[in-house]
Structure formats: structure tokens, C-alpha cells
Image (cartoon, rainbow, N blue to C red; front, side):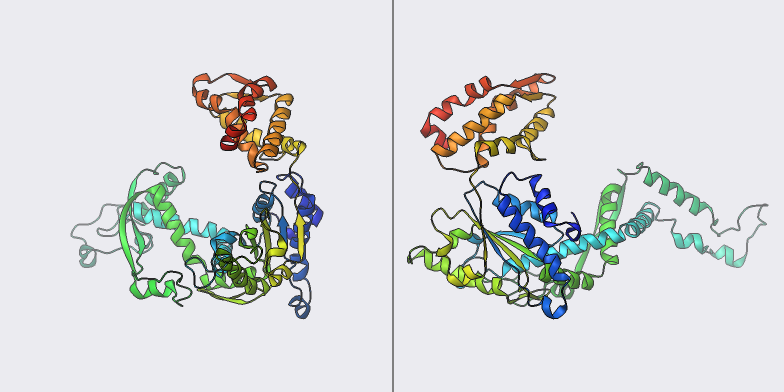
Length: 470
């Protein structure tokens, strides 16, 4: 994760260029939107509330990078980010997820993000405490308290019957150094990994939530039920479990981290971050666009738009962690708009997405760049996969050109699925090599233009077969 406060829009585009080919307009629009989130934080309080996010609609065919831009944004920015599909929601009165659930999901993302950040701050102390608890399990007879405060037996109270030998400890009194030395010896063995497989018994908290019937289309937030309070009401069951030292360390570490982190502070920080910096990527928005005022299923689609509208405009959504104000959450919508167009959305929703960016269809040169340029280039992926079988894949430049030509040709003859076509072509091309890789370990396999033509010529020529395979 990169500190966006130190990134200019130009640098944000450079970061996206490492993974996404082309689509400079979309990258520029997204970079400005992200930078504006940081600029808004520096405004005076009275003006900050007046600056609304400039929501974006990305329009373009499938496979050109809309979802990939969103996915890379989620890794680039330190803001709570959620990607959802508009098709998963239904209007009120129908069975399915209500649109407000996207805000509750975003709040969950924010909670996880803040909790992870705070855990990093207490990691060292939690590890120290977990180590002490683990030593207590390994040495149940030698507790720290016993070392600090010797335990007296009845003989020690009444006095010894025989005089102790010189240098010996009094009967019934634990030698102050023996337990400490043993504990330190085990501590070193623990750190050296010599006790990883030894079995110990730990108490595992088993959360018990009472079973109850929830009506279809409702959820716990709508029923105003706090699961945390329910759990406390019915109690948690402790179950003693025998596990290895390695597993016990993870269990104890998680418990110690939970004790060191103030959840009220986590909720407060997450809520502020979601309201001020949250981003929701609303994919497949074209699928809920109504066309030509049709009846039937389109009525429900328009209902979904009307339900989404108040959330995008700015409203308060009830979650189990309190009310969330959506006024300053940034929404980035995307859709192919093959069967509909942005103007088919209800006018009010169109007005809440003032920025529209058209993404271009991919060309032959784009396909070639996707194969070899990005950090996660497709050819690099396949080379590394086959390399795990001790087989070296070598690609000629002419072979890469031919793969790009075939992808462009097949997309033009059949359904244009953009860069996803390269995945299917590469699978067909390397099918035999992948199948026999364990049997040819230690060899080099060269992929030439001739090999590409031999493997894919029949599929490209047979249009019907292409439709089903590619």
C-alpha cells in the first residue's frame, strides 16, 4: 500500500500503468478522483462538507480493463474499498440483497483494515505475551509466580527434622534459580523451533449464537440485533483442545492481540475512514438499466436504481456499528452498455455520476503489450507455472505477434471479450505442454510462430468451433 498523500495524479497513473495497458483517459479520471479525496481533507471544516465526490461511470466493452483498474485501485489506496455487482441487488419487496448491504460490507472492510493496522502496532507485545503463555503450557509445574515467591510446605513451616547440608536449599522451598533456568532453556528451544510439534492443551473459545429464524430478505441489521451483545448474553463456551505448539502459538497470539486492541477505537476509526475516504466500485450497472420503458423484469431493474439513488446522493445507513453517512463515499460505476446506454438509467441516477469515461477496445498492439509488459504479464505467468515442473518455456517474438493477431481476429469474428481472449488462447496453445510437463522435466520448449499456427489454425478457421472453445 502506497501513501496517496505523497502521490500526484501523474504518479498514480504510473502505478496503474505497471499492470494495465492503455485506457489513459480512465486512469487519469480515477487518479484525479483519488487525489481530490486527499485535497478535500485539507479544506476548512465548513467547506469540506460542501465538496461532494465526483462519481465516475466507466463505459466500455468487457475485458478492456474496467474491473482491473478497480482491483488495482484497491491495492494502491489506503482507503476502504469494495467491489460489488449491481445485478446482485433487488428492489425492496423482492427476495435478494438490499442495496444498503453494500455500505455494511464497506464498513466490514474498514473494520478489518483498521484492526490489521492496529495489530501491527501491538505485534511485538502480543508475541511476548503469547510466548509467556506458551511457556506456562509447556511447564505447568513451573510458573513465574513460583519463581518469584517460593512455596512453603508443612515441613518448612514446622522446621526441618534434620539439619540441611551446606549449600542446600531448605526442605519445601523451591530453589529460586532452578525454575527460572528451566524456563529460559525452554524459551530458547521455543525460539529455535525445537518444540514445534510437541502437543499442548489450550482453551479455545467457541462462540455460540442461538439459532433463530430470519425472514427472507431481512438481516440482523434490519432487525436491530447486535450479535456481539447476543453472544455476551448467552456466553462463550471454552473448549480444551490438544494442539501442536505451532498451532497453539497462533491461537494465543490472536487472543493476546484481541486483548491489546480497543474495539471501540477500531469502530470509531473505521467509521470515520469509511465516511471520509470510502470507495465503492459498482460493476455491471448497465444490467439494471431499463430500455424503452419495457415492463416485466425491467420494472424491478428500475426499482434497484431508485434504491441505489439515495445511497449515492448521500443518506444514513444503519449498521451494527452505528449510522454511516454516505455523502462523501466515492462511487465508480462500470458497464459495457451493449444492450443499453447510460441515458437509459433514470435521470436522477445519471446526475449523480457527472463524469463519464469511455474505454477503448483493445488492438493487436495492446494484446502484445498485455502478454509481455505488465508486472503480471500473461507470458510471465505461464513461464513460471511450467518452471515449477523444471521445464523452461521460450517464446519467439514472432510467436507473440501471432498470438496477438489470433486474439484480434477471433474477437472480431465472434463475441469481443477483450483481454480475456488471451487466457483461452494461451490455454489451448500450451495444453499439451502443461499435460506432459512432469514427463519432460529438465528440457527447454521453444514456442515459435509455426507451433502457434499448428496448435490454433484449425480453431481459428472453424467459426462454429471458435464460438464454443474461444
